[in-house]
Image (cartoon, rainbow, N blue to C red):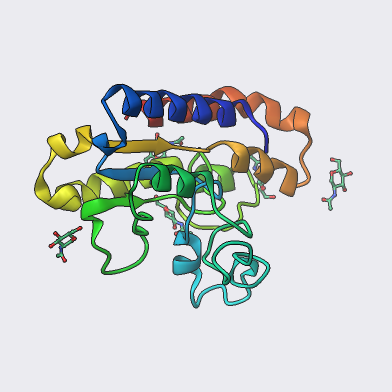
Length: 206
Ligand SMILES: *[C@@H]1O[C@H](CO)[C@@H](O)[C@H](O)[C@H]1NC(C)=O
Ligand SMILES: *[C@@H]1O[C@H](CO)[C@@H](O)[C@H](O)[C@H]1NC(C)=O
Ligand SMILES: *[C@@H]1O[C@H](CO)[C@@H](O)[C@H](O)[C@H]1NC(C)=O
Ligand SMILES: *[C@@H]1O[C@H](CO)[C@@H](O)[C@H](O)[C@H]1NC(C)=O
Ligand SMILES: *[C@@H]1O[C@H](CO)[C@@H](O)[C@H](O)[C@H]1NC(C)=O
């Protein structure tokens, strides 16, 4: 899943971290608001899947064994880049959007394993297999954010967003994977690249 979007995400993070330094120290950021797929999901899919998908591999070792010692819902045996960013900024791991009853005053993670840039319904309309088959696309995550906005940051509003690190991505890899999972060729996926890139660009601007 090495895509140009991965590079874009990296550039975006680097730009933010440079901003953190120039602001006179790491303390400039008071929370993280994260969107993305398995590169950034710290447990949302597992929250959603339980008990819908009891056989989910993510719920078993070796996921989590290297750092946490138990599965956490991350699609890795250790930590994600997001975990290292939070640690470097001195912030706690952000609460999961799909965990009911979370306190989102110190940030939120909307990322879901498998989340595509294009809508689920649209991809399914192309007869593509989308795994997992849930509405968690970039657009859906932005809708979740709009809904949650009033309760974020203890109602401090835009001042608080000014000191929040927004991490957007990775997105796009799962859109291409849905073609390959559905017995389509790279050539058949290629015409959709502009649409996928456009969805990510618009999401970033939103
Ligand atoms: C949420 O957590 C913050 C500290 O991070 C605390 O000040 C606030 O009272 C909590 N809100 C609720 C409803 O528990
Ligand atoms: C996803 O659906 C929403 C409406 O439900 C629409 O506004 C948006 O443009 C769609 N995005 C894509 C990438 O299809
Ligand atoms: C999807 O499959 C259905 C039924 O096989 C077919 O009628 C439809 O044309 C297909 N749509 C696309 C976009 O391939
Ligand atoms: C996804 O959302 C659309 C409406 O935007 C809905 O029609 C569809 O049933 C939803 N799919 C799932 C799997 O929830
Ligand atoms: C996959 O696609 C190829 C070429 O379009 C076709 O010959 C083959 O039958 C397809 N296989 C399946 C399992 O659909």
